[in-house]
Image 1 (cartoon, one colour):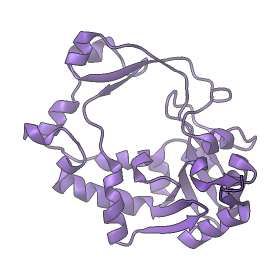
Image 2 (cartoon, helix red, strand yellow):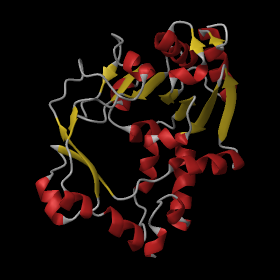
Image 3 (cartoon, rainbow, N blue to C red):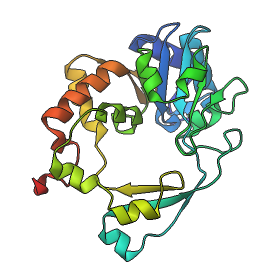
Image 4 (cartoon, rainbow, N blue to C red):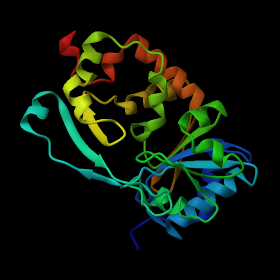
Length: 257
């Protein structure tokens, strides 16, 4: 312990205030507990700090993506068709299934006051007066003009950025790599299977543009960097980049142009 940075709840609340979080805010949080050093009180202390920062009129939502999936080996034919992975979706119980998105959200959704969504693989968990609305999807945080807080991680883990893809017409040399063949769609319906197919966008590449445009605020807490960005501004900026230079984010597609 002697060579590790020690962080207490007060440090976390101070950091959240410094990046711009205020009472009454709605915030979506992606996090890594280990990046801080040693947090006294662990994941529960981080949850306490988040709730204190937004106060009783604010709301916090986290990704509580569940572990109720069973990875299944791909066949050689499926690999040749471009499938990168596949998992069978098992029955989901929001009150018992743990999540794989880190210690902070896994502790957060277990709080007695937390509300957890019913999505079988990508549920959200929230606490606060707008919790029921927020667990319906990341679009609800955007519609509330909420903010994204990244605790010790970058935008590369910010799954709400997929919202920018709505209404964007990507060029054929990208979409052709992302379109699952009909024979696979019929074999693996979305309500029973999760599959990987085609390139995944590199959200982390938006770090620089967000800082250059001044829409992201950063502060160091312990060994971690805490980032804050308003979700609407993030989505709008990312959508502009997708319209102009989508090949930057979809690695492995530019050779098909």
